[in-house]
Amino acid sequence: MSKISDVAALAGVSKATASRALSGRGYVSEETRQRVAGAAQELSYVAHSSATSLATGRTHTVGVVMPPVDRWFFSELLAGIQESLFALDYELALYGMQEGTATRDRLFDSVLPGRRFDGIIAVGIQPSAHELERLRRSDRPLVSVGPYSEGSSAVSIDDVGAARIATEHLIGLGHADIAFVGGAGDADDLSFGDAQRVEGYLEALAAAGLESIARIADSPPTMPGGYAAAVELLGDRRGRPTAIVGVCDETAIGAMIAARRLGIAVPTEISIVGIDDHQHAEMFALTTIKQSPREQGHEAVRLLQRQIDQPDAPRERSVTASALVVRSSTARRR
Image (tube, rainbow, N blue to C red; front, side, top):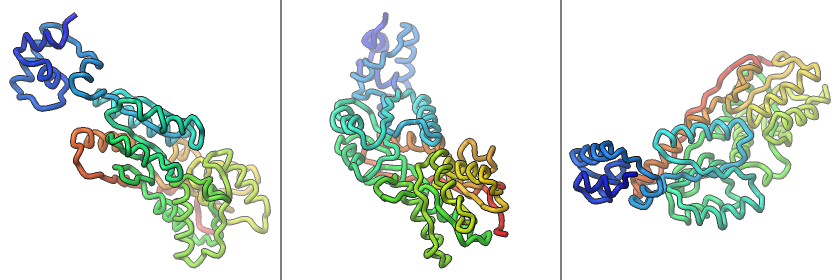
């Protein structure tokens, strides 16, 4: 089996130059690159990742830290990250661990500092645990996905704006009694992004002079969570709201199912809007604020690749577009 030294000898260059020419990382002239490629083809040489790492100082591996990928947003985001990394011939090391666990603490304290990555993509990091700051201290290229991005390049949507637009849509339809499903009695139980969506809801109500009747129903950001919260919220006929903003589409869909099981017509008797444009949003005809987690994954890899290639480049924040998608879960108040 041929080695990189054989290719270098045949091409008449050093091993380091041969490695740069074959990996595409680092400058070599086009003439030298073609000569090395020809030598590699003649010798049927296939680069070994470990050898390339030793020659270039790079592992060609990216670490991805995120919550468990059992929710649509995270699985779609991961698919986008993986697609872009594969196109760049990078490997992916995934750490999908629940926040606030001893295992996750060990990940940040001892596992990640000991791993050799060309860069790290951190998804949904919460400020309370100072995890982003701990990753920054490792002095590796770092991109965060989500609203919290202290000191790193980042990809996000405007979570405050998304919830504000969703709430303003309902206000524009004549609704004044609008509840938010997906808040929490204890703010520490909310993710940073979900807390910003609560803020956007309250901001829209305040602008319309409706802040005094704000209602926030405690619920996990899941279909079962939204269902349970909506059953309680809608059970009292005399006190039920005329509209609901879900912290995400999964919560909103859960609320839709609850309303229908209670015999409350959507949107005739209650309007419901979500945030995300989940894969099931079209099936449930849910009005929502669209975001594309797969595209956010592509953008995160682009920003990380830029940092890897240009370590001194300024940090960049990319706020991806989101827009209101009106379907048939919202209507003018009767």
